[in-house]
Amino acid sequence: MRTRKRITAGLATAVSLGLGLAACTTETTEPQPADKKPAAETTEAAPSKQAWEAPQSCTGLNLQPGATLDGAPLGKCVSEALSSHGSGKMHITADTFGDVEFTYDPEYNFQGELTGPDGPIKMAFIDGTMWIDQGNGPVKGDKESDDPEEQLVAATGELYRVFSDVKYTAEMVQSQPVWKVDEAKDKIELPNGESVEPYRITSDGAFTWNGFPVKDFILWFAKDWTPVGDQATVEVAGTQATHTQHFYDLGEPVDITPLG
Figure 1: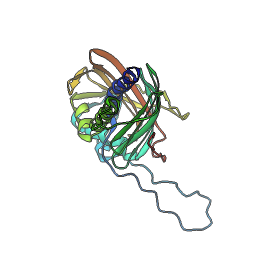
Figure 2 (figure 1 turned 120 degrees about the horizontal axis):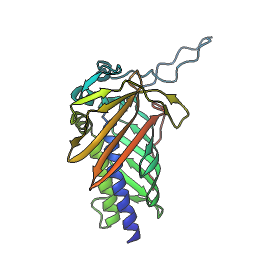
Figure 3 (figure 1 turned 180 degrees about the vertical axis):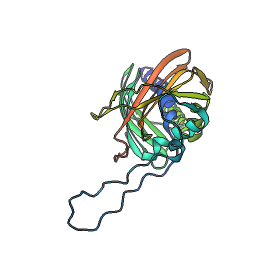
Figure 4 (figure 1 turned 135 degrees about the vertical axis):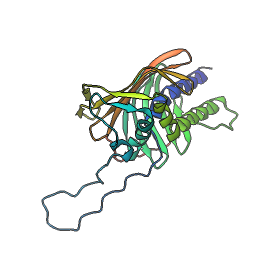
């Protein structure tokens, strides 16, 4: 019974994380490395990767302080901005907190070591299969299994699959038709030591998405539309919770591996 309780807690964790991840996911191809320069004497180091460019869905929007943004085009931008980097890391702050590595290859995969109300949680989501380890060894999700723990982990994976779909990403932001760019920028210290001052885009009041009441939603973007983070206060099963995630090391190589 104790093991099942812990796995069930992992399922609740997935609902919370899935809602946050839904704000920044889409299908895309991973950025290709830049062509190498021919061997020659030079004082400049060859670039390690192709310079990132923001999606056109973002660059056409007004990111000036005080601007009002329509939820429809903003939803498309948000659904493309993060995944266009191909990979990266995020730091999650909520009842369950920690760091997660992710890739879009082109589907969403991730792994992370988090701390939840019941203790440490290791999670990996690879090629549509979820793995969870809450201290008793890794459990691989299998919806056809006779083992209820494996069924619960499979249900967790299904939540991630749904919430990482570009359609739901755009719909979530588009559920609130009006968004505003705050007059003042925020200052955020990222886990890799970088200090950034992104623009803060906030939902104009509460809204509902897929039956979930969303009290407020914040998006942080740098001036070139690099995603810096997001924060959502959402009611799930009668409980209100705030989930924050900040992104860093975008475009850096990440190797996602199963827990088993």
